[in-house]
Every structure is written in structure tokens, then in C-alpha cells.
Length: 256
Ligand SMILES: Nc1ncnc2c1ncn2[C@@H]1O[C@H](COP(=O)(O)OP(=O)(O)OP(=O)(O)O)[C@@H](O)[C@H]1O
Image 1 (cartoon, rainbow, N blue to C red):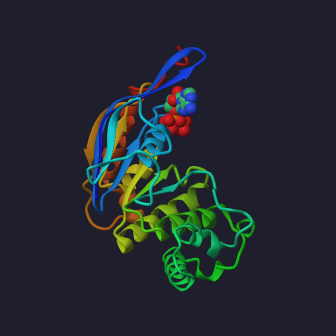
Image 2: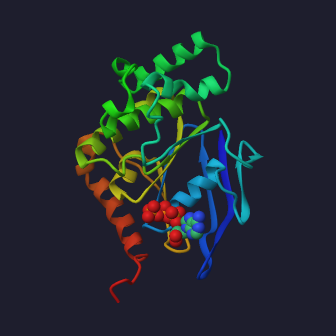
Image 3: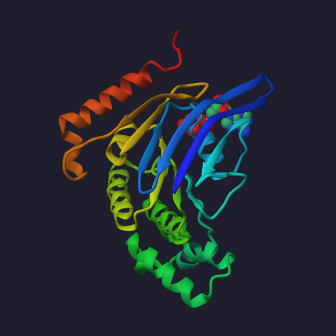
């Protein structure tokens, strides 16, 4: 899998005129990578991910997956949103298997695949539960299982833990790394949480604010396992400080 974003521009027509949300974005993601794009609010992160997902079209530029231009949504790209997007009338197993059913997968194969990914996210015991019976963190684990069950070439994640409390968020970050290692899935995540980005990524793209463009690309090289301890490592802190400084330069002068 090779995702390439080339000279991507996105403009919106607003009542105030034309708003340039993204300006000349160039980035790439390779098989098995975990990449984060970090930016302040309004830097165009969600817009970027929606374009990669094919949910919206660029004003200029191109997005290619394995050299094929993206012209709409496709099963090669799975999406996990910040807000919980489970179908409330379906139980967990049916939520996870819904995409597979749409694609016409036979019931037996579907059940096998659903069970496998429910096991991956540690929710086999909740297969028959309905979304309203689950905590926010559990709902996001179901959403991740649902996205993974379609076996996309790349998982696109739009601030998936943004609505969770700090403890749940840290647990799910750790959990996502385990899932990533176990499944070998390629991940592109957007977040405004610098610590989250440093903890999860092999590489980070830092975005400028309004319009969003790539300010800097950083490779994250941390020793040993990525666990709770690593957050206290001086190199982790250095990466965090470097990115926070870059973002601070982008802060909008709302107090001026
Ligand atoms: N459909 C739209 N029509 C008009 N303007 C839009 C539209 N979608 C996004 N924008 C504008 O584009 C800019 C980038 O928005 P976007 O939601 O991508 O930013 P973001 O970095 O994801 O922000 P946040 O972190 O607050 O979610 C904002 O100024 C927003 O108002």
C-alpha cells in the first residue's frame, strides 16, 4: 500500500468569500506505517482526512492509493470518526459485520471475521450488546473492529479518542498500538493532541493553521516499547516540546 497526497488544495465557498482550508499538502504513507497529522483547531485536519477517504473532492491536486486516484469512498480505506457512529438498532456483532454483509460476504465467513475482530478489540463478550449498553471507550473499540473487519489497506482515524477522558484515552492509545502490531494495519490518524501523536506515530506531519499546509515532518525514534514509561523519556519530552513550539507559532492571535 502506498498512499500519496500531491499538491492538494481545498477551498470552500463561504458567505465571507473563499476560504482556503488546505494549501499544497504533500504527504505519503507506506505499508504498515502509523502516521499522525497534528494541527491546531481549524488547520484542516478533518478536511484532509475526508479528502483521503473520498468523502469530498479536492479543489486541486491528487490523492492516490497504489497509484490509483481516489475519486470516492472505497473498501481500501476504513474510517473511524471521533463521534460514535454505530447503528443504535443493531447489536455489536451486526454493527461490525454490516460492511461485510453489504459486500455480500456469506454469513458463515462473516461471523468468523466478526468474531476475529471482536476478539482483537477484546469485546467478544459484548457481541450481542446494543450500543446504548456500552461506554464511550467500548463504542470506539467496536468502531475500530468494524473498520478493521473490512480489511482496509489503510485505516483513517479522525481524532478517535477526542471525546474520551484522559485515562480511557491512554488505555485506548495503548490498545490501538497492540491492534496495529497484531494486524499490521497501516494507519493515518489526525489529532490535535501532541502527546497522542508522539506516543503513537512513527512519523508526524505538523500542519500550519489556516490555511493548513505541511509545516514540518518529523520521524519519531523512541527506544524500547511504547508503554506508559516512554512518556517520561527525555526524548519523548523533546519531541513533544518541538511540536508544541511549532504549533505555538501557528496560534491565532485571538487575544491581540
Ligand atoms: N463544508 C465546509 N464549508 C465551509 N467551510 C468549511 C467546511 N468544512 C470545513 N470548513 C472550514 O475549513 C477549515 C478547516 O476545517 P477542519 O474541520 O478541516 O479543521 P480541523 O483542523 O479538523 O479543526 P478541528 O480540530 O477544530 O476539528 C475551517 O476554517 C472550517 O471552518
